[in-house]
Length: 453
Image 1 (cartoon, rainbow, N blue to C red):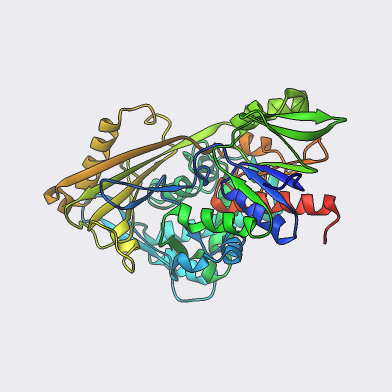
Image 2: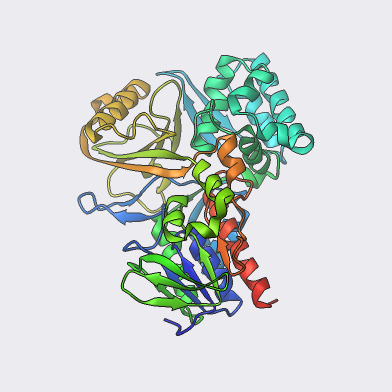
């Protein structure tokens, strides 16, 4: 551990580690503290001892438009651990036998997505044309009426553009829930517009899906730690920050639970809002800042992993329409080049699951299996070997218009304190890319303050 580091970072997820790597690259001495026993924050993996498979705490997808994330992974040497699905392809099931594929075409962007939408069989021709017009309307408002769009929910925008119930059910709402982790009646239309602009109204490769071939922790945690430590920094797990010491309107040290104080010239706090309020004194936020943080709500994600005795679908990525379960990830197909231990290893996602987060695990598993059997009848003949239910009750900030407006920036009223995390105001919803952008922005602010080019 550097005796007196240039920067202390609290939090070892994507935000904290990307900040640490950016700072170490500029030859600043970093000391990073993570309170949990392992790095990863809310994006981590572990080995399931019973099945032998590596399990992510939730299925995290990357896209080609995650430019900052891909650059970060490139710097730490793990970008080659991603499988790139060049053409976006998602199978959408609206009941057994009623399937359609949302598949981009081999055309330059944004025509690749236009053609994909025109071929989407869950919509008739009128709905396809209407959806295209709504997308262009959203891009127009993003540029020329941003404030109005930011004040609208997705459901309100759908009403204003007269989208049919079928278009909402099978296209707009699944897209919203998947990217924003929120129900359309609450989710910000402005944040959805930002996702659509970056993923579908840009280059064709920006809409590509990227799947890690390893667990999330192996994708970035160890490599980022090595990068920082090889440049004179230090990374410590099970190092819980309890508070800070102040001197002349500046933070002078972070107080750890083991009784030690860690001094530094600059501090980056990369933890969720609840932890931030516990760590920093109320005076740092001020009355207005504290009220803004209190405005930020959270939204849960439920991930259910099941192991069946056989494979029940050939698709890697399946959307369910009209069921409680929203998405199925076929780990056998995703890891086809590397192999899962069992042929029937599936992960199911329910986003924005406030009403379900308190249900017993057995009830959630029953719901998942009922939905699976309804949508993919072949699953009825499979035997359930094992299941694992994971609940992230505060997985992301709730991307409603009020919460989005309350997100703080990276700089704070304390000159040597900077914030990072997917919930910081990056213009994006709470994604891996948002976390990395915030971490790198915090690092850039420290670099400027330190006078480093």
